[in-house]
Length: 184
Image (cartoon, rainbow, N blue to C red; front, side):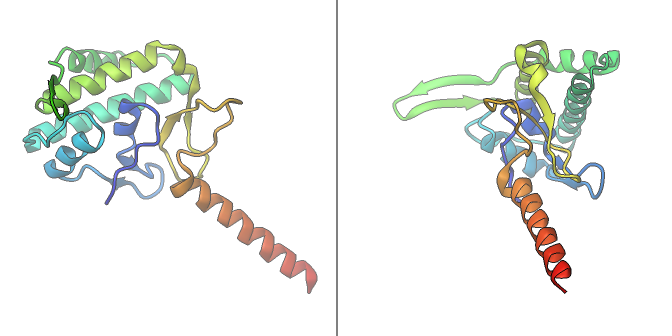
């Protein structure tokens, strides 16, 4: 199971680790090891941190807070006070430690530092200009949200590989079937 980073924002990429929320939810952070791997693939840390079940639960809870706040922003609804409190509390955590070495930068920390980094990214997104560019994927079953930075502001898919191509292929097959049926 691979992670994809198509949202254009660290916090939204974390929110995207629960796929297909409306139909057949697929949890990408099923184990502490999954979260440890995500932290490196997302670029938050250079090496996998130790993650226990409690750390995973806290991070998944933060993911859901981020998702709800982003959905509220998309819908123009006020943010729930409990979610704001949880996000702000997570943002108070320590930042990952950065060190410059001859081979490059190393980012180190624990799962609390990861949560703080995600929470600060969410705050920057929700308080910034990109807030009005938050969109949900146009695939009927996909619930991944992203920042639409396209020139015309008309990006439809979270990513072409997973959703855009599926919808385009389904539309093509439908047109082909209709054309074949009409020819009979």
